[in-house]
Length: 388
Image (cartoon, rainbow, N blue to C red; front, side):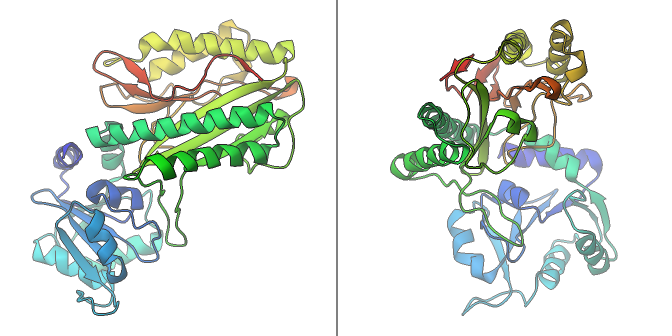
């Protein structure tokens, strides 16, 4: 797979002999297996030479073998008649690394994910190994999507579009924030249930819980838009208010994002002008979304456009982010990033405005794919100025 080749090239450049990952998104990235709930860790091992190994608790054995493309699946713990390598993952991991001659090598671990206690445990467990941070290795490899990831994000984007259409209808009927959100999620789930038999919509869990369904919508009306993210309430939008709808959808582990600002009836001039400014900036950005262009240039175009429109005091910290296994991956569309766009990259485009003293806020976002010749909007629900 291309992602395995990318990871191995990055490992070689950094002198890493094997990756050892506990992060749910990354064990999935290396195996295709998402157990959903992580009451016990799933550990993926990628040697610089050779194929990946997945270490799972015995109770996840049947699930893992039915979904993973990795052939070498090892078990730990106790579960019914399952034969395992022992009662805990620590001894099993050490045995696997010793078997492959990696117990005294340079091992990459994600220091931005591992708790201090687990990092300390690994240091004690593998005293002859050198642990180095592999967080940037995964971040860089994940920037470019493989063909299967692109196919799945198209499905996720289509689900998000369905959710956005339903949210608009619920708002037009005078629905509350909660009614807008639940109508949107019901529409996405209904389409998934009827038309996508081969797709999972589970998100990634943690050691304390799972995420069985990752089709999420929330809505914020009026001055609640300044919260940026909050649980929807029973508040009903008032005529003349802007209403933001935020949607994250997922298909087979890959996310898409769709966000729109709706005008619930005619908006005050200040709010309308802000939306028109953002729409114009998005048009100005479009030619720069192409292979070979600096990602930071998208931010600089936005900054110049906001300054020219009189919003110099309201420049956002970023105008989007990469997306894929995470709804918010680590690379930001800001003025500092050194990423150069290339085909297969996926990000959200969301230049926005927040002017609290004028009660002005906008939130418009699409999921964008960089192609061989330019870019493609994967989310395609109605854009522009939308008044309901």
